[in-house]
Amino acid sequence: MHPPEPNLPPIIAGLMQHAGRIAGELAATPVLGLAASPALLLDAPTRTRLLMHDPALAPMLRPLLTIADARAWYHPAPEQWQICLAARQFANVAALAQAHPALARHLHEQGLTTPDAWQLPALATPLLHVVTGIAGSLASPTAPQRFAPVRAPTLVAAPLVLIPDDNPILLALLQSRLLGAVQAYLPAASPADLIMQLPIPAADPAQYLALSDLAQQLGALAHTRSELEQAARTHIRKNLGPAGARLNRALWQWWELDFETFVEQVQVAFHGALPEPFHPEWRAWLAAQREAYQQHNTRLAMLRRSLDQAVYALYGVTAAQITEIETLTPFGVSVV
Image (cartoon, rainbow, N blue to C red; front, side, top):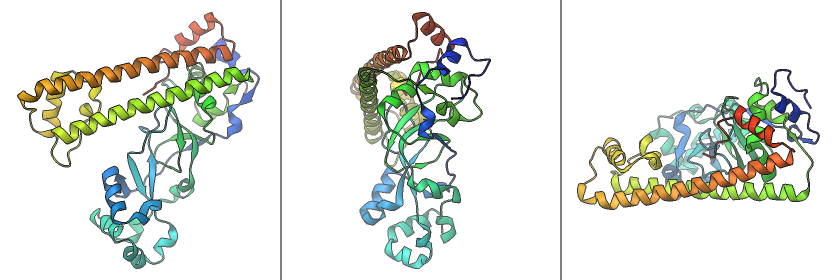
């Protein structure tokens, strides 16, 4: 274990002396991510269309993990995929195009007319086999970290920390407010070191079981909330937007809008007003969706508070120390 820095607050320095298993044993790895051509990225409709024409393309289209995807508690369904062609497939480009005409046509439509443009940068090579485990965003040490389980081989397109262990107990500890305070005050030169220095104490099996249960409840509820978000976005786009329309940032976060602002943003995004006769129906729909969203948020906050209390108990933190910790980290830990 690294010795605590002399300028750490006493409570954080004390935690770093805690005996027990160290997260560093899990070999947290910083990954800067790849920077491939945007033309090699696919959204969900384009991926679906390509696979309808050629199901054999499935292994060549890899889910892409971005900062936005590293949401707390759960691994959301990917919103982007990366075209990944193996080096051997470039030995005979004509054969590749003949075997997969839909892919070749798509790449040419994107302006990628030479084989060299179809390849991922060298940095991506070791990432083609990552990862199952936990991914954490490399946020500023003054901001809450976000950790999410990753359960399928995934490409990485953003600075992340990858931990090859998707144990819900570890996820619970990493997302707790207590270890958020530790992360905020450890030296920030290497974000991976922030995780590798975290002490994980030995505990009664019942304590670990309770933490695991809370983490899994939080993951399931966060996933349910995400499904609500996405279903509402689809409803707005299909019923109010023209074919191929995309939501603007405001409509993407529809739960933040009152009805009047919602109507304004529909006009901005889709260049057409929401007809007034339909206002009552949409007002009621938006109110119901926002209420359901707030109920999820309330339940998430309750579960997160329960988890924080369980982690405080695991580390033997006193009431006075809890006050100090929550003063040091007023932001808490994001569930978004």
